[in-house]
Length: 489
Image 1 (tube, rainbow, N blue to C red):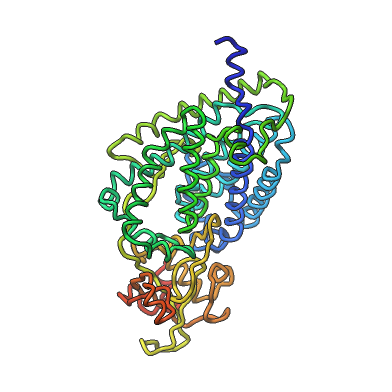
Image 2 (image 1 turned 90 degrees about the horizontal axis):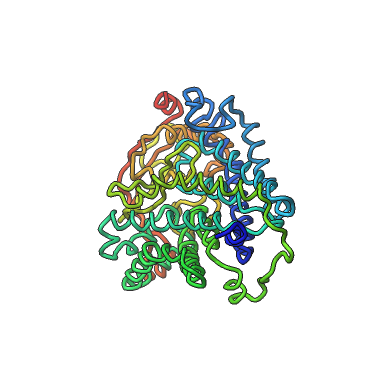
């Protein structure tokens, strides 16, 4: 293959639609991520947060976790980082940097990657989710897709398909190696009900016949263990594989709330969709986006091939991990969080245990006191309330509330949260859907465990309840402000 033939292979002129979706879609998810951080980080991790970032940075290893906050944290700086990220991501969604030379969107995406990595690396447990590193890796890789002045580089499209492969196949292998429920096809008997944050259609999905749930599991295994290999097949097979992944992810979007995990999988899958296939499905999509696109500059070719070589070199450990008996889930093998290992729900929780927090104004509380429950935005509480659709927005406090009964309620951040409720801290209360004291401070708070399950159709008709719940225990008895402060110390 001479240089001209190589250059014609490198320039994927028939994947312009894929580039448009990848660049604008990943930028849109960065916008959501920065918006989520702007609204929640100060309350959770700010100067007076539940796990203050300044305290964390005091014992921070600057060599291991790159962050702009290494020289000091302030809520004002955090807001500045988020505001910058929102502006840059909005410009990319609008396609403005893509109008210039290829180095302009490159710098824009690398800026998003660095800004958001700075947040993630001081986010502690509130940012310990696999989709954080997934967004970072996607942002770095998409940065090398170029601009409207060049054709999309085929090597980068292949690397994005490789990212989708690791995401899907890794999740499939985690399930096969995980709980028996994935192998005996019963996992979806429970998942819709016990998933971290149900959506408005989750109850209806749960109430579908059990044979349908078994078909769901078979479909999941096919989509995650077979289809990812076809992403690298010639067209139109590659586009068909992407369509299957997109369809299965849309079902997950409809039946639950997983922040931007499903949405980024959908966006990245378009790396395998060619313009002719997209045009055949939707004729409004043009076949020739930029007539007369100039030949790719040699400097950009060299730059992109260098990035390709770097990401390929970093792929060794994630590739080994996919076929390892001790497969890691949501793990990074380097400090820059590039070419990571992914996977989720290797086991499915069989019962839903919810932590319910309530407060009272009584001086000497007991079970007969006027206990009023705090309402969260996403996690179940009020048994009559229809769960809302929040994804791709990420409610970090609600997600960690789901993990509490699986671990322990005696976590540092949770006691700090109870202390903030006793102080009626306005920043913390804004994270909640319902404050039963309308900004006032309760004298006591308590924590109870309940078993929740979706109401059957008959139970709903009789009671109007969408959830049925039963009291289990009281892991944290009534707690006053003085006792809360003592416990945190």
